[in-house]
Image 1: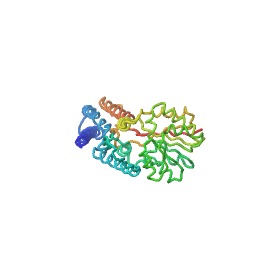
Image 2: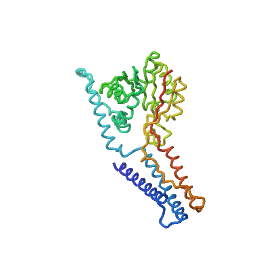
Image 3: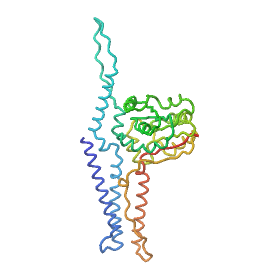
Image 4: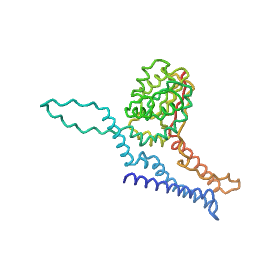
Length: 352
């Protein structure tokens, strides 16, 4: 907890300094300085601008930290313990009774200590978001599969989207490599099986699948497997069926540094243009990129109040201040377009 407490204090201090300097900048631009000339206002703005630039790096850095306060050591430990307990219970329920030892048989060796299990399910519990959050974020995908049948959720995880489809009366089944994920899905009453997505799709008859959904999956696949996955989907899907591939948006630096790098199972980031190209090259039509999970406005870099265009008779200092304010706001927008846009995106396409 000491490390996370210090991280939180550093974050709060960086944010306080940033907002203090920004508020001073905003006052100079919006309200002016009493009895100050344009030259004095310009000098004050330039001085505050230097202070602002000194504070923006620690402010942005504190927003890009991989470990956040909400994922404290205590929370992670508790989650891992809970999932380990559930695994132990399942193991006891399924364990076969041991045959009695023969007389004179050597005593069995003590079992070696089990290898540590990081438990990807527990990792998802800590960092992916609660099941309620994921359901809320995925609910608008359901309409894309309206009227479809035999939809596959590849990499179904804890089964949030499968539950949404079931509630909408859409037949679907999930596949996932993680046995624990599959057990969670079955416990909530949806159909799921343990399988490799590429191998599973390649083994299906042509045009036998009514839709394919894969959220936060493609970033786990190396390039050759990703290409094979999209091509196998194109062969297995029925004509007109929907393909939806959601992934982390690496063109948003917050998403890259905070979400992509955190997960050791991620193979490589996928730029929206790259994933769309792969889908189109595999024969899909009407492919479009839909950006999702926008970063709240309150977490983006702020702009100062713009100044009115100075009159032709205004002193040079007034025009210079106007230009500085305009340049400042333009650069804030450019930084926001790189740093704080959308955390995720989805490529949505239709099988021809």
